[in-house]
Image (cartoon, rainbow, N blue to C red; front, side, top):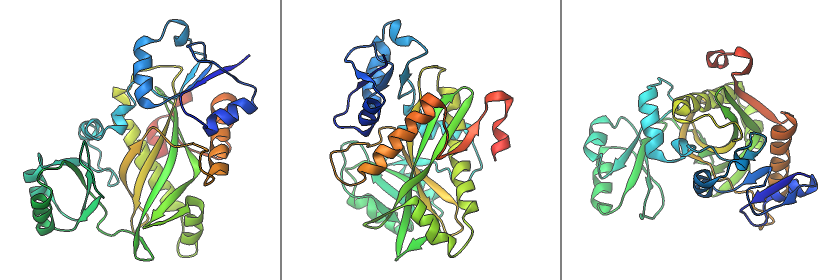
Length: 305
């Protein structure tokens, strides 16, 4: 008898596990755990020896926040010191205002953090940055450089959201789901439909390669900070801005993806993703997944660039 423990209501993951005859439990006797990143941190501190059984699957690594907390990701990227153009160093306003004024070379994206609220804002030049500081002097923001030549559809910037599964950080193994979604202003389209749109105008091989390269360098940057835990895996949602030359710029990473079936929207997509995820983790069936990197068998990460 296989068991699962889940901390989300009406999740597509639960639906898929029930179809596989998994039985729900509420203690540490689970075979698969699906919980939030915050709850996982508390859980790792209290798991008994049985819960550390390597045959179990837990959907977070103890230090996955090295990617999802901007300040920690920033530290890792600075140490890694990659020349990959798709990786952005982040700054904090108002603390890093003087540094930003010296290093600003193009438009920057400002996002509220902490207890601050409000929409994100694009600051195109130093004058706009000065005005922004005056208007938001009591709020905290993260700012990062964005593409000076963004790709536009209907006069709107294009933001990509793609899911990446990491079954292991040592050796590093990562798969990207074949589909995702894109935001163009208030409109949402699937990543596969975006590729069809782009194929009518140019080759899309470069965008796939550029996305994988940024993901790979990001994972390599945090790899030394992630301890080896055999039973863990992680599903990250990477957010990128699409540029005119089909390169991408990393915006943010989320580890608590929404697979809720509470809304009629995207239920089929959520269930399909959850099913493909379980096939990958349990049966090692990687159909519908693109290999970003797989260092098993002695392969080196440079082979994937």
